Image (cartoon, rainbow, N blue to C red; front, side, top):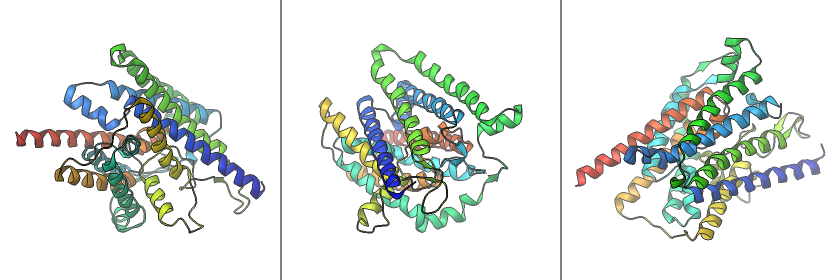
Length: 373
């Protein structure tokens, strides 16, 4: 492949990622898709509607990713979330930190971007603080602590630590077939549970749009990163490459480390080594998509902090999300949709920890309110 062709292909990957993230932002803004909100709805009101949106999106993402892998369009072992090393403690600790933080900050990384598009000025503060904390956990002071503590605890396997590989070993079948079977069982079950629980009175169209639309965006992002952007032999290194990814592996949507990379790109823009990536353009795309949707629906409103305590909660939550999201290798989207779609063992631990942390934070907020009465 010539350098001009490589440059053109990289541009295609970046524009495709941007377009898909715009769609994600628009759908999330219209449908109020939010994992934190889903947990809060369950704890406070017993309402599972938004959790069913998330379950439907997960089911679509699982089955879609398994289909791509079964067709040979993407190799699960070459994605960001799949590894022979099961970092269960990092996923658990980081996930719990992220889950608690996202409640304090009124939403996860993706919701923060969606809220910025809807006019939230305080979400800009959350974004910057989360990005700085994330970068410190990638390469700074908290990175040293992360590597010296939770990252040391892991279980190493001969093959990738995923449900399909374990199922293939247990039943003596092909890993791709096992992946498709597990995805159909788990993903299909989640989709069935979600679809049978939606009611017209709850806004059936928006619920289906959230689940099916966002799930489809994740699958499309896997195709863009793992198929369209895959180069068998890069002309400069003569090695396999996945174009425009920060990790050098196939990636889908995630919104913690990419925010850190976006801030780094902005601050060192004149440095030619700082180039646009799928993650960076996705951050901008979600804000743009959310803004378009908010303006079109007439819901765009400027929003600021309500009190000193509000500021403190959002700052603390942003730090927890930045540190926790990098430690767990993803957020409610990065692990909760992109990662779990690969059926990675670490992703299941991270998602469970995020949900547990979020429940604990919601109950903490209820306790705080009761004490003030």
